[in-house]
Length: 373
Image (tube, rainbow, N blue to C red):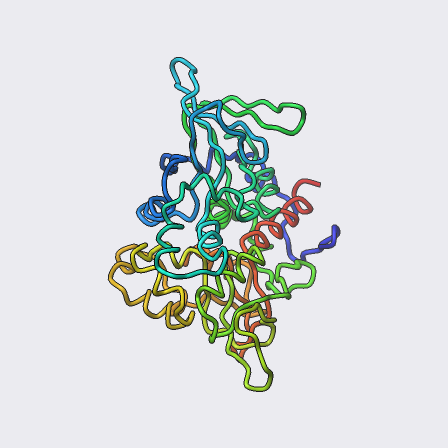
């Protein structure tokens, strides 16, 4: 992205619009519920049930203090508000992608093996995917602009201490202690930013604007002939939380067990790690060898899926066109609670993707140039 972005018709920085720079992380935390977490002894089956029951996509793992090294060398602690005595140590974050990577592991998918894998402690799979290799915290007093910088680098969520104290050790390791925490996500931030009038100019830009560089042109997906187990392996290999499902080609020989270039292919669905969140563990095994499209249809029609309130990826494909505004892409992501919006042409052929990270990055850079220079 060019550092000299010009926006025609943009406001001339009137003082009454100088609001966002004064906002802090604590302004986003007013309605946030208490942190959802799992103990380090919880099984993967227990963890999936926690994710499903609370409609979240990731949970921190808590352990007794003094026995673990936290992800990334962090020391994120929960302490008694009155006495200051440390009660627990957060040792990592686990997402559905970590769980799926563990299930896909060595490629075995017989009933006994999958059942056995689901009974291992959650602490044993921390770090299976890149995201869970580190824990991030943000002070309630962090400015929204600085929060945007963190989330613009691909950090999806951060823990915010309530009544906490933090200290940097040796310039790298973080020691954080608080009586309780809340979770702040990229989605929370975008929902907050979408209401600011001073961002009207950038929100009106087309996502395809070359100055913005909001669209990622390289998109890898899977074909509609892929099996669920192979899709999970592809996601693990590529560290992808979701992949587009594109129509297979009759013109070339394709390996349906591998990622394919999705550019200029017709997109017919999305497979996300969170799709399996609504699937009871007892029914997981037979679904792993289903075709990915059939799996999504079965899942969307199942009573247990409807009861979770989760969106059906196969039936509600979230897309925009190159001429769509950034605001449209943001609102579609927020409204549908998805972490990416596929960019398609008028024929429904895939052109690229705009992720939450892309949206935050673009908004932040524009704001810095327009208001804080």
